[in-house]
Length: 213
Image (cartoon, rainbow, N blue to C red):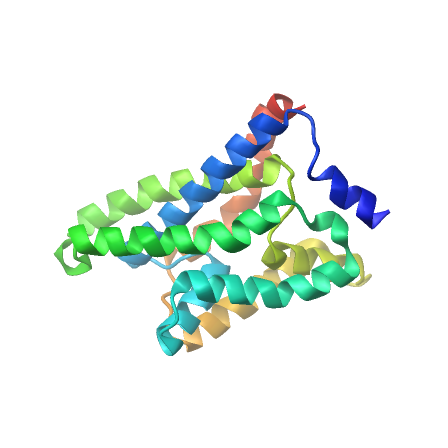
């Protein structure tokens, strides 16, 4: 059954539209993470942890993101292949390296210390709006989720006492805490992605779900 569900993620209605939306969404997410890192208002929980690991080890953010997701990929494969798809691979491999490239490009053109608070706030506001929409499309196209997102889903599915929302909060807070201890910044971006990503996905899904059916 899992194998059939896995195959289904690689052959869906409106596959061309799904792949285009996925590619644009993942690219936009990578760009936005680079901007978040530049303006210094924190990042999403997963990036907070991997940026902390990157700062401590000297390994690039993209590589840390890939290795972290590969570790989490193992239990997902063992427990539920239905959560794996093209989007899973794209998120694991693409987002981190796109962010790496954009961080280098931004730092080469705009040194972080040269930005005023007004410029930081503007860059933050635009990138946050884009990130919420891009992440929503990434979820709505339904081509598999990143291992980071799949782990709390699996835990919730096998835990009767805790809801998915509770498990996800514990999961995100754990990653944030470890990232903070490793030296990452926790700020406004972290709070907004934590509290508003879910509602944003719901809103976007209602409006664009029909595009992919």
